[in-house]
Image (tube, rainbow, N blue to C red):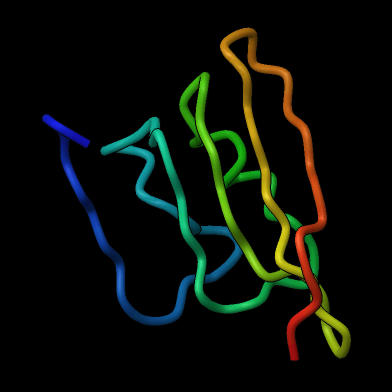
Length: 83
């Protein structure tokens, strides 16, 4: 990232208030704590193109790589299991 902004949020986010819509859209989102499913509100905040890495699942979790292309099409790919 030659020129840009890095915004970090520490702490607990509810699924209703997730993200920083006022500062987005974001080229990349990295989530450190697992969510039961991929949160649509975070996918909405991805730029086109944009990429997100997020652990998803309850007991068994997967790292999910979410890509949004320049047309807004979203693709999900399971990268690896985590515990």
